Image 1 (cartoon, one colour):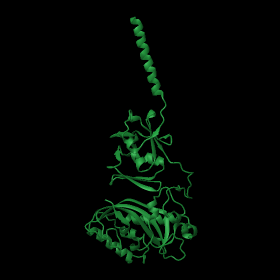
Image 2 (cartoon, helix red, strand yellow):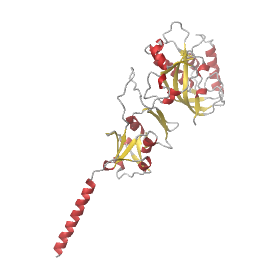
Image 3 (cartoon, helix red, strand yellow):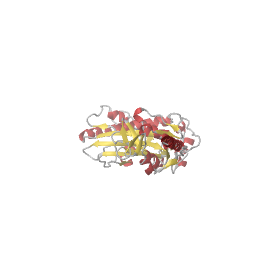
Amino acid sequence: MKKLVSKLAILTIMTALLLNTNIYATEVTPTAISASEITEVKFASPDNVTVAVNGQALSFDEVEKPYLKNGSTMIPLRKTVEALGAYKVNWYADLKTASFIYNGNRYEVPAKKEAEVKNGKTFIPIRFITEKMGVKVTWQQENYTVAIEKPHEAEIQYTKDGRPIRTTNLPKNAKDFPFILKDVENAMYEKTNIHLNRTAKELYETDVWVKQQGNLDLWAKKANDNLNLRLNIDYNNMPTDFAKKLKETYLDDRADDNSVVYAAIKDYVNWVKKNKIRIKAIEIRTEPTIVFDDFGMMCMRSFVKFQIISSDTDKNILCSEKNISLKNGYYEGYVDNYLVTNVMGSNGSELLLSKMNYNDISNQVKFIK
C-alpha cells in the first residue's frame, strides 16, 4: 500500500511539472504599453535588456547598457535617437543638457529633469521616447526587449551635396524653400522676415550668385567666423589681432586702419577690458540653405547659444551699434546675417558682413537661464 501511495505522489509531481512547463512555453504576444506603465516595469534581469528599433537590436558598449532607475528603464540617448533618425545630437556640459533634432523639432533634455549622465554617456527614460517624440514602444517580456517602432517613411531623397530631405511635419513656410532638410528644425525656417524680397526658393531658381558652386558654404563660413569672434570674449585674454580679424569679416569703407569699422571695434575692445566682459559660445550653427533677399541684401540664418559669464555693464556687450541691455546668463536664438559687396560684377565670393547695426545679435536672442 505504501509503495502505491509513493508511486501516486511521484506521478502527481511529474504531472504538475509538465503542466508548469507548458505554461512557460506559451507564446507571448507583444502589446503596446503607455508611458506611465513603462516606468513601472520591473525587469527580472535588467542587465540583459535589449533595445530594438524596428526589430533590429541596437549594439551597446559596456558603458552604454540600459539599466533600471526607480523602476524606469534608462537607455543611451545618442545611439537610440540616432537609430530613430535624429540629427545633431549635442551635449551642453555647462547647462547639463542634451539636444537633438527629430522630425522638424529641436529637443532639449535637461539632466536633472529628464536625463542622467553615467560613465560619460547620457541616458534618458523610455517615457521620453513615447511622451515627447511620439514613438510607439512595446515591452516583450519573453526576451526582455524594449521594442521601438520607427515610423515608416518613403525612400529618402537627398540634395546634390548629400543632405537628407524631410517630407513630414513641414514648416508653415515650406513653400519658400527649394527643400526642407531633416537636420534643420522648423523654428529655424519659420523665423519671420520683415522685408522679404526674394525667398530661398526664388534665389535657388534665379540668382547667379546662389547657383555659383561653393558660394553658400563660403558665406556660411564668413558668418560663422564673425559670430565666433563676437561670442568668445574674455577681457583677461583679448588677442592682439582681435580687432583686425573682426574687421576683416565686415564690408569696410576703407582697407587701412583708419576705417570707421576698425575704430568702432577697437573702442569695443577697450570697453570689454574696462567692464570685464566675458562671453562663451556654446553652439553656433549657420545654415547655408536658409538664404534669402532681405532689403536687397543677401541674408543667411544661424542658430546661436551662448553665455554672458560676467560684465560690469549691461550695454554694448556683443559689439553692436544697438545699445540693448543684456544681463549675465544663457541666451539662444536665430540670428540673420546680412552680407553685401561693393565689387561691381562680383560673382558673390566677395560678400562680407554688412555694417554692425544690420548684424546685431542682442535683439535676436532670448534669455533662457
